[in-house]
Length: 295
Ligand code: NAP
Image 1 (cartoon, rainbow, N blue to C red):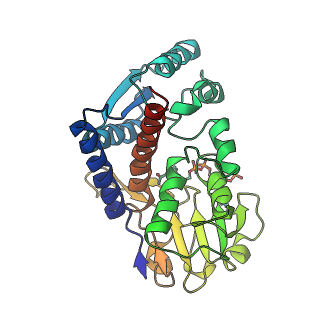
Image 2 (image 1 turned 180 degrees about the vertical axis):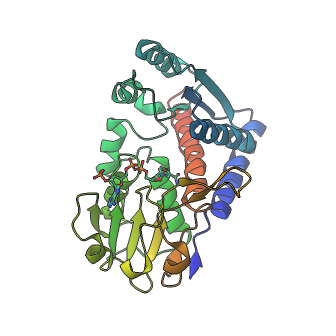
Image 3 (image 1 turned 30 degrees about the horizontal axis):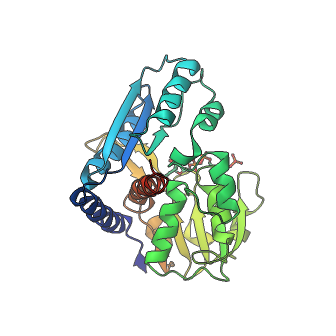
């Protein structure tokens, strides 16, 4: 069994990006600038945004964190987004989800300039992705593709089963694994909570991507020998014996499934760190595109 080590791979990617940024500085060029909008003070969201800002600092990017109160109105948030769209100093930005109830997340998503949409959530970018056009691939699927690529995991002609159909992970993963090229050329089955007898389907899989948020969902009796496992799930499980009062776990019974797998991502240390590295990569791409168009 080979561990798809996302921590090490993401560190390698960050080092590669840091080198590019260093060269930009030496050439007197503008460095990439990522902004993040955080509404409210939800603990998990604060942690995620904090890690993104820290990662920017580590590779030498400029970063701006805009914190808005949880009572912010939709109009105020949309104004902030328009300001970021118009700000030539900013190459890309993200709006941390989830958003409070008074805000229509879809409206917010549509307001982001697709050229600065480094999360790849705007329908223009999602459509381009589905049509094999150059675009921003959402960071988590982009991270998974990069892991498969760097570990040279064969995907051609394989049966990939994706569990979970969210717009940010499962759905794009199902499209990307079926695209022409590498990683891709897979035969894909997308499953969700209405899928009947998931076990019968996972037992036919060469590659399984779990993105449900249900700890221990995928058990050893549901997989074949030599299966490739990508565990996207991140769930905080309360545990008073831990210093933080919780531990993080994925959707896979790692201990038993890893005995049958040829490749497997750990949680933590698998897909999670890759997501942040690919957000940086998308910001670098955004900056390069904007520089080429004279901005
Ligand atoms: P989500 O919006 O939470 O939706 C969960 C999906 O799983 C839905 O499509 C749901 O089906 C499906 N599902 C739930 N229970 C199921 C069951 N028993 N059998 C089959 N399908 C089931 O998805 P998400 O936002 O992609 O998040 C999924 C997990 O990934 C969470 O733990 C999240 O924290 C984690 N995540 C990790 C990263 C990372 O960087 N590693 C990034 C994003 C998310 P229906 O559509 O039918 O409801």
